[in-house]
Image 1 (cartoon, rainbow, N blue to C red):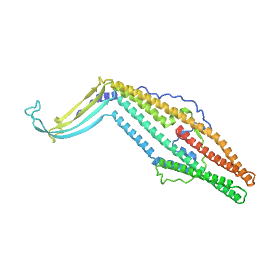
Image 2: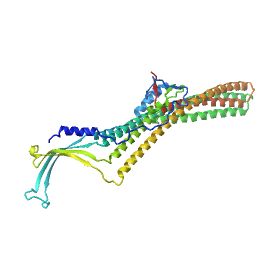
Image 3: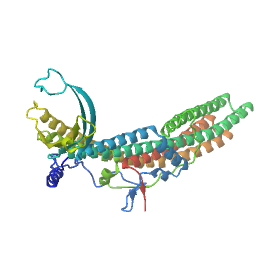
Length: 471
């Protein structure tokens, strides 16, 4: 098979490489961005230039080795994360498929057939054999000369979709890691609640014993004993409820780390976890930090590239086709010059009338781009709202926590005073019950606020797109 002239080949390659694109010039949709967050305050500080993003390990700021281990198990075993990874791998493979369109497609073929020709075939020659053999060895080449950028726009769209899938994977990973940290801190809150309830049950048991002794001695009435018993039973009921809530959170953690809820266990840990201090970048950096924003932006870029694909349908499609090889009725001498055949040349295809199908395709591509742009803006605006929400929660919960701690201290002093006065006979047991109930509620409220503040800190880290390392 003769070779193409090198000059013609170079010309065809240069035409393909210099193909224009009919897609509009891409520009990310604009969204309103302020200079700083409205509710930025301690324990969140402005980020320094030396701070840099590190998505893995941000939960270590909470200082709990068990949480570190659970996060490792999540990455290794979580089914949702595995599905997100498989989806990204599909997108990666699809990009490789569309990228293959940039190159010529070459195939080889060979066949051997035994044939019988019809006796009544039109224009059959008198000397034509009725039976004959046919052997063919050949190759074919197909190459679309990308004059209008259709192939390149397809590759651009596929590449952007792959980047969006990679961002989806990062977003899923961050979301699951934040969900695990949130659940773990919630579990710690229940452990602390259970500790307080157990301590209260011990105190209420001693108080019941005191009233029973005073009742037996004729000092206290049966009403005091009933009130003490009621208070103890209420505390036990609250303990059971807290234990049930802890079990539900534990089951959720088991699912996140890919374990069976029926066998998964975590020992009680009632150590207090402190809210960490993290830098908060200016709002403009959120556009680069959040993986879901990156995914929405890349999908907008992919939709923009598809406008070029739709527009290219209005122009001729130029394809370079070639084939060649050897063909003979005898196998023994097939690879000889007389048996050689070849054909090469361009083909041009132009759809002249389609009833408006191509125009509708362009309109649909433009509308899809508008939709993707609107979704991008919605994701960005929601991201800003999430940051502001959690900054507000941290600030206001911190203020509420200061007041609640003061209330808990005052309630405990009230308990001490009421018990002393009860022993002295100066007050009835109702005053003790009221003081103890208020003290228990105040202590539990402190733990609840501390837990909510910790959970808000996790959601803020998630809203900001990950964690930081201070270098």
